[in-house]
Amino acid sequence: MISINDTVFDQAYFSDAGDRIAAAARFDERAGDRFAVCFTEVQDWLAFFFAARAAGVSILPLHPSTPYAAARRQAETAGCNWLFYNRLEGEPIVEERAGEPGQLLQMSSGTTGEPKCIARAWSDIDDEVETYVSFFTEPQDMTPLVACPTTHSYGLICGILVALKRGQTPAILDTGNPKFLLRKLREAERPYLISSPAILHTLARLLPAGEQMHATMTSGTLLPEPWFKTIRAKSKNMFQQYGCSEAGCIAINADVQAANEVGRVLPRFSLCDPGTAGEPKEIVVERAGVAVETRDLGFRRDDGMLVFLSRLDDLINASGLNVYPKEVEDVVMSMPGIGDAVVFRKQDAFAGERVALLFSAEQAVDQRQLRQWCAERLATHQMPTEILQTERIPRQANGKISRRDVAARYAAGEFEAVRTEAA
Picture 1 (cartoon, rainbow, N blue to C red):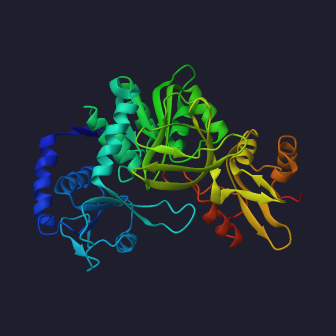
Picture 2 (cartoon, rainbow, N blue to C red):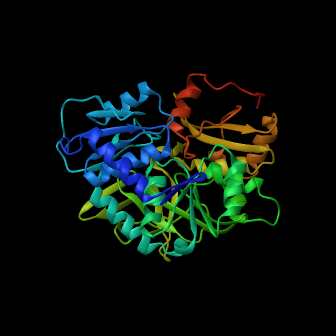
Picture 3 (cartoon, rainbow, N blue to C red):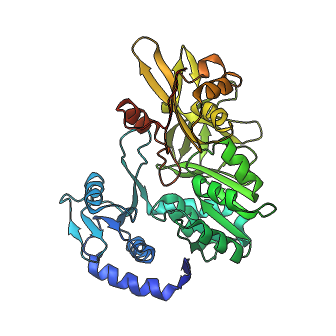
């Protein structure tokens, strides 16, 4: 069974819907085809997903808010033969057929480059779920609340499929109303909230003094330090997982004490040349003789904890010294009144790479005071040389920031300044 907001859908519902979908999509005739799927209603999407998985065909989930033109474009990019867009009548997209065994197809986030299609065999998904459940046992007696998109692997695999494997009834919740989320948290027995950093932060701020969430899971991006402290204080149990599109979940932390402690590596992987605190390296994992390069910089501590430092593409080389954007962002966001920030690379024809800062705040901030705040807490090479206050930082639905996109939009003058002052 699966609960969606206040409605429970049992196995019979998905079985009946699945039979209709399999017949309409003609899965038996199109075993080697790829299907892109976009439905507004969660139960319709999940019915299609379970039917496609049972038939062993390849499926590309598209976020329910995806406009039709964007859905067609993504279907073409992923080489999908059919697009099912809010109806059980498939629209042909690409004629050439891959003829491959069934796979879960997903588009990468595009935070460090153009989005690309990632294909994972259903057998690999099954192995991930099996390993996840046996390795991460803490939520076994909790009520899973999935407050994130179920078209993304985080909500779909680690939220729904893992809960079903444990014999639980996952509750999928609409994230648009924080008060509704709080009500569901209070109604559930030992609730285990699987959500994005932004939603967890919002809920933690809304909770009254003395009240805690029973358990929270975060993923997708490292929490800014002020957000982490707020969520950690409001979570009796706090979990974190780390992974990538190509490999799925790589590591889980069952007791988060620091934002960059992303977890211990699942036994389905081996960590290649893990690096040390003094000499961090790219995080590379291997499974069945295949290495996956994450493009993340980090190291493994002596106690086995995997520590994340930065995306390799996000590192800023300022006068020959590495600047980790999150370190600067944490300092900026610790200044009272500042709500969000993103640090990114600014190319300079003479100086090479410079540190640029975009931030939002409750009120206009005097940049001289902000620079003084940073100067007291950062090394000279970490200091932002360009600062702009704007109304909102462009975060994705999962809380991620594309520094590449921010840098391009900043260079194009797309951000409207709330207030600028001379240094």
